[in-house]
Length: 396
Image (cartoon, rainbow, N blue to C red; front, side):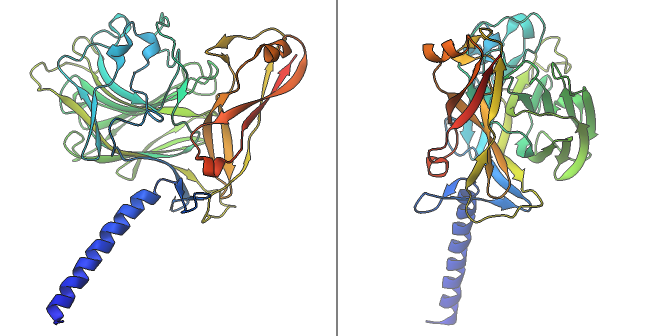
């Protein structure tokens, strides 16, 4: 075989190896990637952090086990008007506003149109204005929740006046106080070449309202993809744009949140500023991916195989006979459990608690203590095994 043919074969093999490794990296970035026997999970690390969530927007429709496509639907007279228009194309999620997209809530949000997807939803989530009334009861859904971590998306904004793109998080609201709102960005062409970020306490007594604006210089937010990252710790939030720190919020948020990706349009008297009726449709907010990592504690080590080593058990206290039930669940009851792993990290997982039978309700009518169990959602059975969520109910 002559030297030129050998060189060509070498190049082809190297190219094939590169492609295989590239694809393998994306496969192993799942964080829950199973070994061949599917009894272990192979963790993926990025420096001192472990990947716990990755969405590359490679499949359509979006996975209903993770994403809800009806924006704050308990507040709107017509839940279908709150349903997102989107497409998954070329590895991007395209959130779309069309000319015929209807206002999602004309009574309380005027002409505002939206295409939004959420990693959780429930009745009464995010009471954004006074005077709202629940119009639709929603079965609680928490596709992805977490408390603390490093969050990142790669995205390109809309390029027309009167439109806004937002990435924001809200508390899961097991109780009214779990109500914080973190706007990682609310970017609009009307604002110029800036990123605007906000923190709203709403009913959370531990949080105060905060804001910042960051000028992006020569970056083009509407015609280029850029990285938007933040780290959430017990002390607060640190924000990054294309890996450069741009702002901080000090806040003690002590419960999980969901993420919301939103494209908006306001055609009349909307707070972002004038609307351009000549701008062509569709208007598109593009998101390339969303990833979340958890920090490995300094006293812990990265591991080759991920295992659950413990879980936090909660306590729910009520006065005898003083409780309310909604969708078969006790109001105010924790909707999640925290699992801890052999590398020192933890995740928060949604729980479907056992049915409240007449026998259980009878126990809540008189003082005493008992336990309830629930199904932990979002962890592969190979890793979870027979583990159940448990909670101690104390009746005073």
